[in-house]
Image (cartoon, rainbow over all chains, first blue to last red; front, side, top):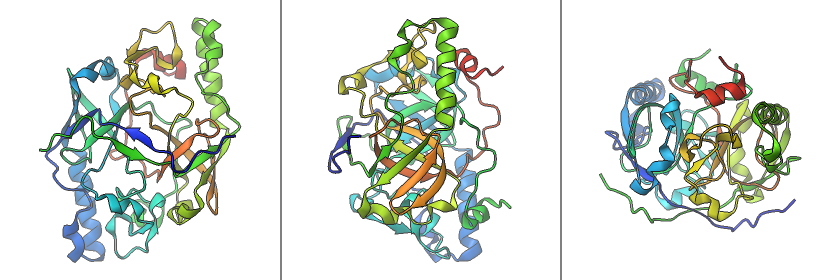
Length: 177
Length: 177
């Protein structure tokens, strides 16, 4: 087995960008003043807002052919870059998950925080329309102007995940037993 | 809205690497001689093989803290780089999905081909054990030595995807109606 060079740089270039009414991140700073149940309600409200949000994925015109036949799928996975997160936040090790200050800090890899060593975010969304180099989608959490890195069809999970285990703080956000 | 600079380079650095008994890709070259139903059976066999495969994610020792509490989740999402794919294959526009030569070529974004402009692959796997800087997982398609880019907890899909639409060639591979 070849062990990789830890310092090797892998280069990505945006293939498009997001056009969205969403101008700031789901976990916004405005909830700093909120506590306990208020924070949970704030996050639940944001999740509901995202679920019905319609955005556009604008792909570079010269890459339009890569989208051919994507409308055969009802859902797609979008990989994008959180361009509003400052570079130095890539070095964070522990965070309060979803900014919930009542929950002890967790390792970044145990959270979906956008501030991570390689900030490639993923979101599975409904594909509403494919027109030329533009895809209209529903449920995308990316803010306006986010660089798009990749688009993949949603093909399900094999084997299916029937009963995933989540920690208590996430079950509380999602109101799951 | 700020339109990004299409040529902007985004830099990733591996956070670890995969240790796996799998030495070559799921869609291997050996099936070049197969036709029709043989190709389908070959792919179905590979999928079954991956489902029970146990691999290790070896994280850089200095990043071990980012894994804290990840064992609160039963499943995680691994982002990795297909290091065996030559750089020039990032410019491919159309491919036979899963190498099925009987199926007309599709745009790369309508397939899960590892040869894509930004070859960041994702796989949702079962987390079996967390020991120090090593995670043992089941069901990872990445070949031995693949650089790991990110690890995220699997938190489900919101809203849930109850009845995704797939094209005929994928339904045939998966033997779905």
